[in-house]
Length: 124
Image (cartoon, rainbow, N blue to C red):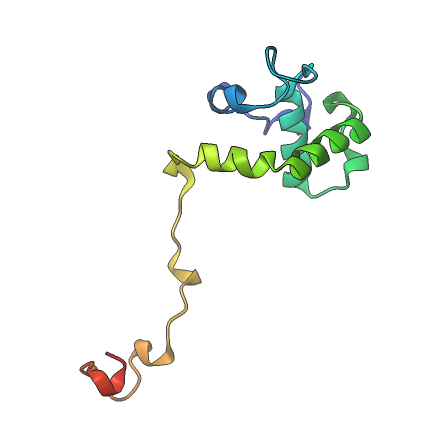
């Protein structure tokens, strides 16, 4: 039976994009990671839920170990580098533009005065 907190773990398509860029792979300098995918899922779970690290479900690993590794990646700037690598060719599948977030000047809503020509004296 699959655990409920695992329903949002990254899928195979996302893993194929991430895995070649992660630290701790065989052939790289340093320690080889046991399970990068489980670590990434753990970090995403904490970020998504907003719970303290101590509340990380045990099947993701020991919370202290996961936090320590996450913190090392933050200190080394790896998360920023990973984001930069992945945004070279962004996937706009989840992009959404919502007009309710756009702030308009009150005059744009049909205030008295109508359209005015823009010239040097009016900021043009």
